[in-house]
Length: 303
View (cartoon, rainbow, N blue to C red):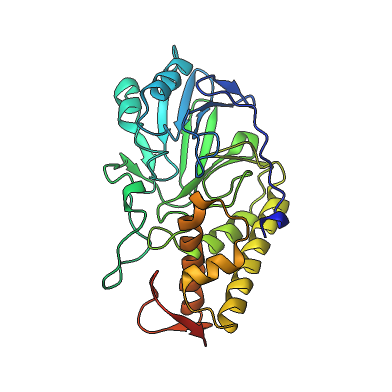
């Protein structure tokens, strides 16, 4: 089903080597490749001489050293964090200690909703629970430095505290994990919310940035077209889930087996969480029923 999205998986970034992307944006790739991180987490540097660092990355000594080397001789005026998954924010304390820069983000890690009775958070270990920003940003607030101006764009869905950052001088958006050219974003309750994700996608579709730079992989060069495809893909996935429930599938594992053909075994758990996110949203809309609150182990039936 992902064939309906024009993915771009070619990216020439080399781990640890700073790369100039535009007059105001550089990136440093972390060497942490994987099924959820693609070739690794990207740390961005905005500005020249007096700069901002976006997403310091995981607690990886080599990456921290590479980022600090990339800004050697410059003044770091701000550290911006899109969200608090452990591949994006744990390097923040080390970067702050070395630069003295204040940290800006939406807030600490939190779930999109309270846990239901007997429910556990399957992604609990992926959250950076130690992260606390110096400045909590609200939607639309601006962080500015010497030669650069960044608007905070609140985009919950992938996580409850996800923010994108719009660079006014280049009409560019640093989209974190909300919109990526190489893959769809993981939306997994209770950390994430499909309803929030779709609303945030609509919010970004109403904006006019020319290019997105995501937290993994290369740029989204036609964001309006790409986001239309993302939204269409999610609607197709929702329709497929409704169809399987109408045919008698009641469990998430049964639905995953039916609608994810040729799935990488390493992604089976993530697929189940994605289906769960859709089902939770469908229950909220009254299109699917279950006894009690929707959970990973619940039985689902048509409304």
